[in-house]
Image (tube, rainbow, N blue to C red):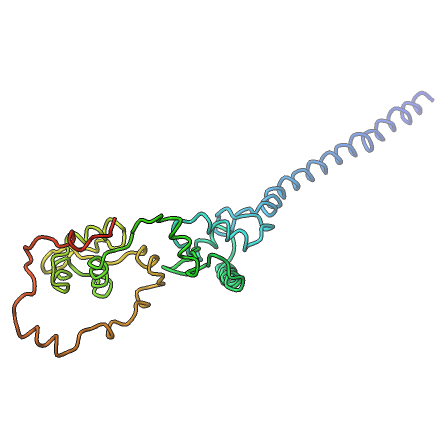
Length: 265
C-alpha cells in the first residue's frame, strides 16, 4: 500500500507535477518569452510606422498621419531659398510626384483664393512670394521711404552679364562703353553675379549670374530671359560706329558709378 501510495501518490504526483506543473509552466514561460521576443521585434517596425520611421533610403521621415499640404506649407515658411521638389520629398518621406502634385495644387488654391501671397516655382525650386498686386503695401512697410533699387548703370551691367555669360569685366566695359569696376563690385556684393573661372587666353576672371539673380527676376532658368532682338540698335547705327574705329571710352578713366549711383544704398 505504501509502495502503491508512494507510486501513485508520490511518483504519479511527481510525474503529474512534472507534466502539468513543471513542463506546462516551462512551456508557457517559453511561449511567453517567444511572444515577447516577437513583440520586441515587431515594436521598431510598428513604432517606425506610427512615427513616420525611416524612408526606404534610411532617412527619417515625418509621420504618415501628417497631411502633406500643411507639412509643405510649414517647411516653405522657413526656407531662405527656393526648395527643390526632390529635397522636399526626401525630408517629408514622400515621392517626388506626390510633392510636385501637392505644390501645384497649393499654388492653384492660393490663386483661386486671391491670397496676399503666392507659391512660385523659380530657380529650380518653390518659394512663397508676395502677390504683385500687394507690392505697394509691402514696399511701404519694408522700405519706409528708402530706395533700394539698382541704378541704371547696374542694370545695364547686369543685363550684359546675363546675356553674354560667362564674360570678363573688360568685355562688359567694352559693351557698355564705360568703366564698370564699381558696378561689378556692387553686383558681387548683392549676390547677383559670381566668378566663373578664368578666360583661357588672357586669364581674365569671368562672371556669371547666380541663382539669387534668377530668384529676384522670377525666372526658372536663363532660357526664360526675354528676347534681346527688340532692344538691339539698328544695323546702320552699329555699322557707322564700327567704321569709326575709335574706342568709345577710355579704359583708364575713373569709374563713373558714383555719378550714376544716386539712389542706390
